Image 1 (spheres, one colour):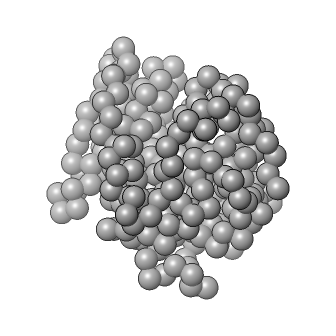
Image 2 (tube, rainbow, N blue to C red):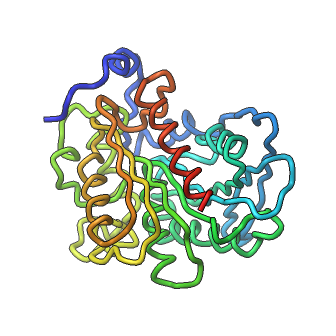
Length: 306
């Protein structure tokens, strides 16, 4: 059993439409969750660039309007269960980080499943990391302080990208910030099997993994670059922040991943927010959302200070 939702969330969730993903509902839900216009924060500028003409992969660069060299940087990956979303989902958050923490954020518009299953989205993210490092001088980024962050499926991609960067040895990563990451395709933990999950249900999770893994779904040999929870070796990874809600289906896999990172000698900070469902950042007035924002920004400031 999962613990109860925060009462402040219950009322909001009760009024939300059913967003359970299926092949039939995917186009409609994509339309609801993408293409929103987010006003640019004062003192911040954004620019969208195509980094690969062949795949039309794009990045949106968020940076302080005052140009300074040697700023810390973040390659950011949006959420959406591997099948939804775009860079507008976290634009306000990235603007705030730029303004408050003086960093540059590069948000990658990776291709989505099921049209583009693994490894295409991950390779897009790797291309975004490579592009950011190659253009670090123009962007004003100090590559010694360049990390990766992501939310939900973006958190899963961030974990996978950090593993891929370690394994390829081409683009060092200074830190990884995993916000409610989607890590384990096997869905065998108690929280992933719970009934009554809100925002991201057990059925939506199955749909997302089936879409992302394609013909690989259900195989015993799914690679850990596709599902990071399957990684046997977590050594050599950078300092990590893991956060998740206490009423999130990803709770158990995220807690276990953080514990395994720590056992592998990785400096790891773990936060579990009581009463919070998946995507609780959608509820900005929730105490857990405010606390999480403070915790994340404090941790990032410490990474940037290093």
